[in-house]
Image 1 (tube, rainbow, N blue to C red):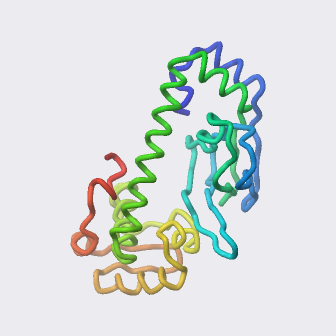
Image 2: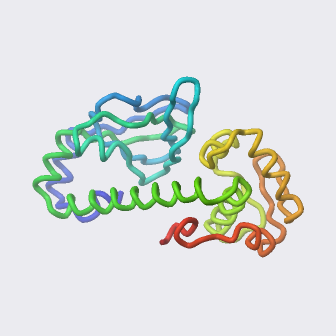
Length: 221
């Protein structure tokens, strides 16, 4: 867990003394939007979805996995959470008491720097996502997502989507039926989909369609 990588051992022991490792089954709400952040949550294994609702609408903000943390900004500012979090799969999450985190933030410059880096990374991720939603078409967003995931897995010809299509559609800012049509629109570019399995038969054709931008689509930038 990068947040604690360079923190003094004594401080880590003090944090963990009052922390708890909790198991959650799939599709359980861990945090509810509008509630105070009583804990820093760190995903140990499994996947969780950060989402938000408004009236009868719902959108996915992010999908997090092992090593990722959530509720940091609300915790540091002692504000309510701006989104809800639920598990997408069985997961183990480390819950670190908020007050202990704030005390360490004030006492340990290394930990404070790690928090700053985490928040800076989150801000850049949100900036990229905002540009993605406003500047790219639905087909371009899907094509770039598939290319990024394809490269992350070592350029295998076929791969399984990392989460349900309903969640993917929400992540990409489209309705499930629009996602289905977007997958169909990729057939001429030699993308084949069978259930959750995607096969990219011509990477260059898909890349020419997607025209990825480093400041939007490159996770390393």
